[in-house]
Amino acid sequence: MRTFSTRAALTAALTSLWSFQALAADLPYLDDRSDAAAVVRSLYNAVSRKEYARAWDYFGDAKPAKDFAEFAKGYEKTERVEIETGAVSSDGAAGSIFYNIPVAIRAIDKDGTEKVFAGCYTARQVNGSIQEPPFTPIQLEKGALKPAEGNLSEALPKQCGDAPPTEIDAVLDLATKTFAASHKAQCDVAREGDEAIQSYKIPYHNKSDAADAPASEARLFRFFCQMGAYNETHVYYLWNEADGLNEQHFAAPELDIHYEGDNPDGKLESVNVIGYRTENALVNSSFDDKTMTITSHAKWRGVGDASSDGTWLFRDGAFALVRYDVDASYDGDINPETVLDYNSGP
Image (tube, rainbow, N blue to C red; front, side, top):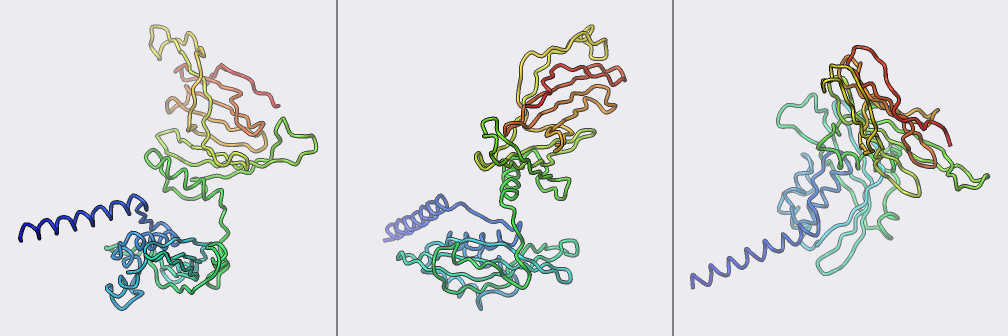
């Protein structure tokens, strides 16, 4: 009898574990408290994964039920929740920012029944500089959802709160998130402000366009990556309607440099181009919307007497390498040599 009970308990435990693993595989874990809308999405991710303690923890002092048991019981018939959030507005108060989040959800019960609800959540962010441990992240204050009709986009409220909704630049938002996800190991993706990202709109025509065709528009984004003693690097993304968003990789010459006695401090004998490579980050770079070029200036040492400079021209919807200069002599003088020059417009 004891053996049967042990086996039954083990079977039940394994079944529960397999069920959880299957659910986790179907629905990735999301615990994102970086902005108010992300907190709401994380809340329903926790509900869908049956992680009710995590869902409960997204709320501050104003809990949505009298106790945790009642909160969890409210979702006992729910299999999963799909969610869409809208433009978030905010209001400042003493030491806090309050966010108003438009939300629409589709709740799918275990029997397959689907219901749509829509309304507003309120979240609060306490100024981190005035807090003492334990730190309090963005927390939900309350949520008021009512039954709604249609799909999530149709049901989603256009605005919550008295403040008008913040306009979201969808392309910029996509570029920012893509950069952060792709370069979090190499770059300072948390940096903020104008130095962190610069955005440009580039009107252009393709060579194949008819003479009277309207101009197309590309979006260029320059992200700060990292800073060293005398160089800083940037990563670029380019978007257009036809191709979507793409990280830019820049052609650069592969150099074969010879010094007298194989000593870089000796006399420079030759600089030869022996091939080409691509770089996904440029050094000390900038975009000039008048010349439609990205230029870079990489110092090989702090005094700047040895360096390399590249110029990439935007034409026909893409950037092409048109000039490359190299100062390979560590002689205290700034005397670059042009190793490649196709610097002419279309």
